[in-house]
Amino acid sequence: MADDRSFVTYQSYLKVPELLSLQSPLSDPEEHDEMLFIVIHQVYELWFKVVLQELDRIAALLREGDGDRAATSLKRVLTVLKVMVAQLDILETMTPIEFASFRDRLESGSGFQSAQFRELEFLLGHKRGSVLGGFSEGSPERLRLERRRGEPTLWDAFLAFLARRGFAIPADLLERDVARPVAPDERVQEVLIELYRADPGLMALCERFVDLDEGVQEWRYRHVKMVERTIGTKRGTGGTTGAAYLGTTLNSPVFPDLWAIRAEL
Image (tube, rainbow, N blue to C red; front, side, top):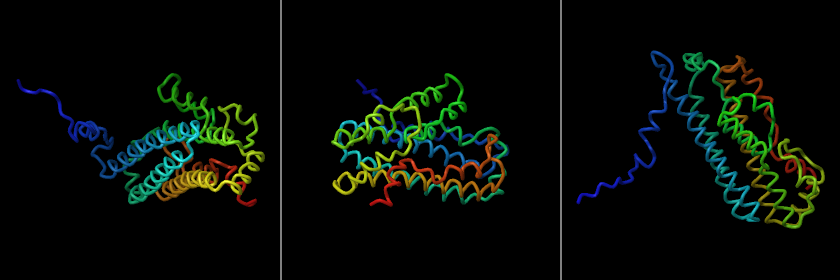
């Protein structure tokens, strides 16, 4: 009897036909550069998915007390961030005139509506209730963000990890309202200074968190410069202020305590 089982192929495993059907330029006739714009942003969403998965894993490893494996996963995230920054080089090959040829088609569409990027911000501690207003009540994106807002951040997981290692993390920080943004704390900074001076292994883990923070800030900076290069001072799509707003997000560290201690070491 013939074997009618379906065999896994490259096309079927990666769902290549479905993937290649997801690019639908709106310009008519189609503007050449719109396809590039769509692909770049779809790829960003895929990388956001990977980064969220990895950061969730890092938080879980920290909760398990496994700092070594957490550091290994952090290295992967840092490598992905470098790729994300490099993708902006591709987007910058598009001139302002080329972008303007299809920009009006975006209408209210804006990168601010990326639910996954907002999830990433929440996971890293930059929690703002105002963000939820950009997503419809009851929508899958809104529900995911509400869940993220009510969960501990990566920094919360790290502080709990340090407490289990015997460091004097204040109890009120371990029991804080996790729906609020992460804020610097001088008591934590004192613990970190002690850690840096006494435990080279944990210091190395802290430095990976600094690398992560720096990588996120680098991506934000390059994103701002790309927007300035492409649309200048024009308002962004979706009614945003474009580069002017993006510029206000710079120099906002994810882990402020790790930066604050630099002058004391």
